[in-house]
Length: 358
Image (cartoon, rainbow, N blue to C red; front, side, top):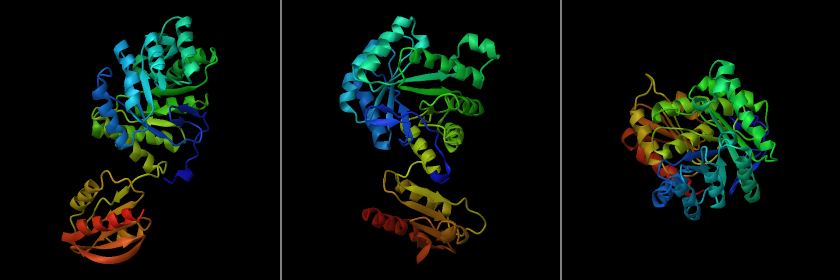
């Protein structure tokens, strides 16, 4: 989908470290480490891999004071904004902020007295640190479950707005909101509802989405449906797997909607009875060879002339299969014929030439 067809919801622009969320800022891609945060070396090593994959913002769990104190050293060694994920203990939030974290994820209604909340807010205000309110279907308040008869979009939104009001009553407005569920329809409905009630930036995702294969599909449907409606300022694809896979999936979701014009775009057709080359093997080899190339190019690997230069004419370069051969084309114009044995090598050579000219 062309990004011009998507009218993004107008939201408040909030600074998080070196970047912004909301407003006219690009939709950012987040992930979360799965290391012990107090193990600085392991945590930094994982963050560096995520940075290289294109992660914009990284979150770490802060379950204890050792983790909160580790933030200072972690911050010195990474290049992207750091978020502290905190539950219940307000002291961990304050220590994390004092040690240089760029954003805090905490629900103010869950950290005790008003004075405790006020102390966290005062510290965040003093250092310009925004707070993300994160409502999850699995931890919804009992009174809301009773009121609505279970987890509903209305219950999730009411919970989020309750936490928002606590912060607003303390004159704190640098707020980002997430409302996540493992159900895609529930997630979509909840975000649609909250988007009508507040202008704060929304962190979009489907929680507990699953393993890499199924979780990517589930997240793509949920996140993609919301982004296509203009809802969402930052995203996380939550997967049971290596965090780098979350970044890969997140960036592809943005690319598919025209919300990210960065790096290679690879397209290939599904094959049919007209295909007379081993397109599946060719496409897999080309895609694998192109991993890590960060050039703004669109590459097409098509099975026949029907899906070739015509339907893929906007590709910078591509091939269209023939009878044990392929036609190499650029921007819809056929350049030359290649034998099947040389398709991958010749296409990669041409891509390398285009890349070097950028």
